[in-house]
Length: 546
Image 1 (cartoon, one colour):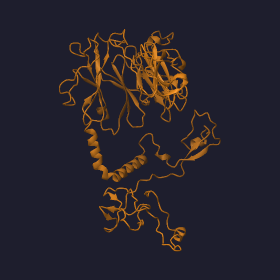
Image 2 (tube, helix red, strand yellow; image 1 turned 90 degrees about the horizontal axis):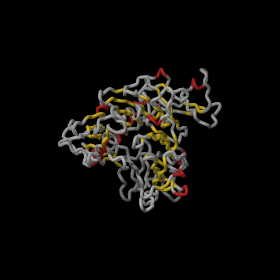
Image 3 (cartoon, rainbow, N blue to C red; image 1 turned 90 degrees about the vertical axis):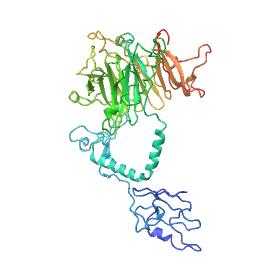
């Protein structure tokens, strides 16, 4: 057994003193008894590292002398017993946040009037969507550390306590500085810091991009030694040289220019331009994380999201690549009855979202709002560009879907061919996917909107959720390729299998296994033999093949 340094022996009292009396035929016991092989983990101070001295073989068990912290035995510094050099230094104590014993929050039904308890005792801890019976009258729940709840990250008391915690952690682990540096250097030595991702081609002469024949860009991400954040770059497709090696299909990217890694300004491909430099955006900020980075279908606008505080609440921005003009998305007008909480007078406040952004084909963006517990739960659509590709100042949001079940969170993405918006509601064990065709010609047109760019969109369900069944889908020529743990006979499998159905055929009962041509054997049955990680469907230059 080991004696934990957090165990505090009881103070001397009449009860403990009585145990020190001589027992008949026995010796006076020592309190507390410590095994000879006991090893103590002691805190380290900023001055020196303190280690426990094991007792000599055959010696009596040591007794803990009085220290400034009960329960921690005598320590040594460089092999000298504490206190032997004229006194023991006071060990550093961890900071303790003040406890407000009078603070509380209310649980139950609370009135709305000016004289109600809600006005006298905020904040409330009451869920407006709860279907359970509320306590009436409400009860006060002690909340002694509620003062540390600061979403603004600006409260001086909270910041001061965090600074004290960091100071204590630095002092307690100061003796590990050499080990930390060694581990960091060892891990960095196996990483190529100056590197770039494999370029991927996006053409502008296809899918309504509006570009000249044979035009497009190679897109890739660059990382530089000594920098913590990436740069997003692109280079124009060249029709004169050896861009690719597949007879004009440009399936393979070109090689890098000589000396591309010599300096930060050295291009990887000819004509390289940086359309988003996250390191430059961060500047002197202590934290900055990137959420989504997505280009409009014509590749003229960039939408991206940033988390500047580390609380996973993102701001959204749109940049025009040709001019460098940039706009921050603000809280827009909401349609009546959509449950929104942003009146028109608050439209100067930056939009807060979960970080996911998806373009449609008509200058609009899909985004997801968080609820009070930071759960993605509402899907909105907003038009930011008009028919001529100009920024719209007066913007409004259309609520497309709301996930009411608190166990489920929303995730949005676009099918690989860009045709469908996919909306996935998922919990730990169950999922459900909805979809909508985001091409302008497939929207429900209104009488006053003949081009269909402002028409409403209706989401449809691939298959209703079923407890314990998870699935995700990809689109392939009018079919869904379904990755799921649903096996034959309604059972679940340990891994994901691959099934398919036609778009519009709802229900899991219509999912048929994808088989290997000529054998009839399931490609992925979800068993232990093979594990399916993902499916990507792409169409090469010859569109007759998939």
